Image (cartoon, each protein chain N blue to C red):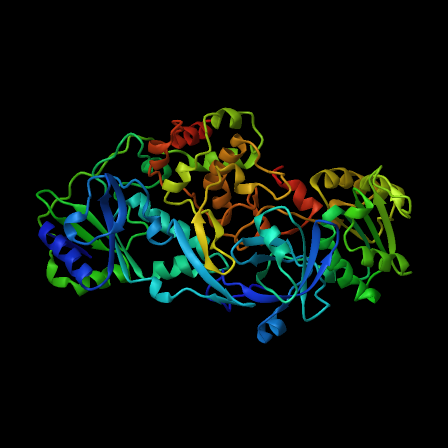
Length: 334
Length: 282
């Protein structure tokens, strides 16, 4: 079901969603940086710049309370979190590379034990994606089998059209419900022509070949040179739409406080550091190897797909200039 | 085995510290009783499984359940005080409250060992993950053949479960061989002097119809596995537990993996055959 949504009606839609009390999260400027954050008014949305961090934090916040506790005398009480924590949300203007990562995270957070912090938010969120009309040097979604107009992971995909406005395709029950609830804002798509989509300048990488090499080359001298520049800052994991590692820490005193889930990164030396002092990944190349292995082998072994959508954020942000697309492409040619 | 009754998988049970036993100057056992009667009745685990134990305000730590599933009404954990959480757990007094999440992970397939001889090989603070199984087997003594325990520590003082070692030594249905590293023996030491792999080789348990269990520091395991092989144990007949750093214990937080194996979900119990197929990253 394809519909047309004018630019004006798009703003009206956002306005109505905000007015209805839903949390409307979209790329917006925060101190000069574009981030996915709750909108206060429709004018705040920024669609022509790639958000610095991915959309995953709409479901998996950087820091999140998982229990609170208190102690009075000898008596300790633990309090579960309030389900009202998870408001009905519409995530708007999501890049296809960010949307495609959401089902990847679903697999992790529902694997046997269900992490309701993630899954409740997921259930209560409608994902409205926006096809990309521009790509930069770091974009490589096409190299990992996705595309700037890929609908994966979204409930609705918007595509910009010539002369303004969007073609809107609902692709799930949630998406159709959102369109149906605001039917008056949409019209027939006839005569509207979509803008040309972005063309990332990367060749498709043979990920089967990458996987095959990784299957048999855990030990290989090239790992040292591949990771030689990594400084272990963890930025790649923090901006990645698919990285999901976290830490669990208490904040507070013995008397009262909260337990929290905080983003973590396999690039940090302490990530795997044992209490005994032993560290299975004691050197940076081993940690970087884990990053590549997790994304292109381990996750595939468990869930049958790769844990990378080619958003290019890690390439844009790496202070040492590490280019994961180039690394994976090299591996595919080994 | 998974507890799906709690919607919040990170919500711990509350447990009271019922008894504190100092095993060595820095290793302590806590006996814990769940405060909720329903949990006390429904908390079932198998030897080999682990929990996330928490001191509120300090955080969570991962240890195996050191007591046997045959001993009902309580669980025990055993830890060395080396960090923020273990120091805080050590400050708890009898009657105080801590948190417990679990039981998590796989377990020893004890039914597969019925009718077989068992050899337990442990070093230092790695006895607890085998002690749960040792008592489990001793409480079902008729189901097993000969039971041999080889336990070593740096010094006599570093040995954990000293009272139980004495008990095992006195039983005529257990063969206990205890050893300390050279120089670790006091004047009244009545065990052997030497490293665990060497002592195991001297003890020479028969491999026929026998299962071996090895837990210890990586260096001990490294030198013990070849000895077992020499004694005729095939890799599928040797079990160990891996002890990687964990946070969630549920296969999500992403740090305990060895290759594509998640120690928290696929382990912590593995055969030597499985371990040898893993990359050397533990």
